[in-house]
Image (cartoon, rainbow, N blue to C red):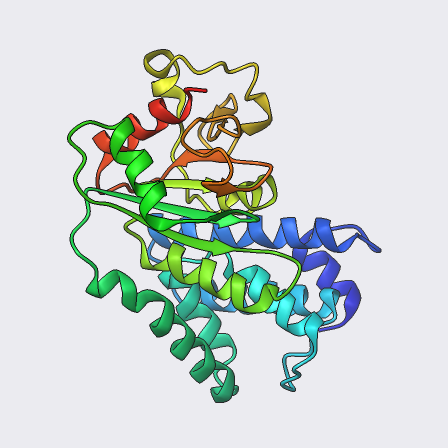
Amino acid sequence: MDINNAYRVLGVKEGAQKQEIEKRYSILLKRQRQNRENVSTGQNDTDDFDQITAAYNLLMGYNCDEFKEDSSYKNGFLYKRLGIDYKKVSNFFYYHKAHIAISIVVIIALFVFISPFVNRVESDLDIALIGDLAYSNDNTFKQNIRSAIPGLKEPSVVNAQITQVDKGLEYMQAAAIVTAGGIDVYIVDKVNFSVLAEQGIFASLDDLVEDLGIDKEKNKAYLLNIEQNNKEPQLYGIDVSESAILKEPVVYGKQKIATLSSRPKNRENAVKLLKALLRK
């Protein structure tokens, strides 16, 4: 594939910025996933995925024929992994089947990060912090949540802190959390909200606006048109940066956006937490 064909396959203009290429690639992958879920397709579906990924790699400057440990390859690889589900993981291994070394590293990393989910005590509310966020004390944070939701017994909290220090391992941890599933509420920063929202990780909050007293105007930055059949943008996140539960030194981070998982295990408690987070 030459560079002109790559621009054509992704549907971007010649000389497009990397941010535009990444966004377009994410949209095309989501469309591929929806096609697979709605229609039983054959070899053409795999061929389309290969073409899209090859075009993306070429325009981003990632050489998939040789394994390089440079930061540009690693960051590009991990950026794409941030919002993946199981099918995308499978597709990735299919496309890079020659790179057994990479596959082994990823599998080991996923095992390390997912194993806590397997061995933990059964929880009645699962929360994930992703982005430039961190909590100082696990017990204090959980106690704050229990106090805000009477009757809650065992909240669980996981944290994938993404900073400027070592994004590689941090993105891998975030990918493991998302892929493992089972999260009820995500609390993310603005950058990672946009990335995850486009992958269909979050549920619309439109049906909760009245019950929770959400100020839609205040949260208009989190109105997105994710589902193709929706004519109007829907609300996918609420700003809870001033929440009493999340104030420093309990949770560190400037931007705190709360969202509901698209597949929560404990939806009732998740909604109660969102309501509690809106309190200042």
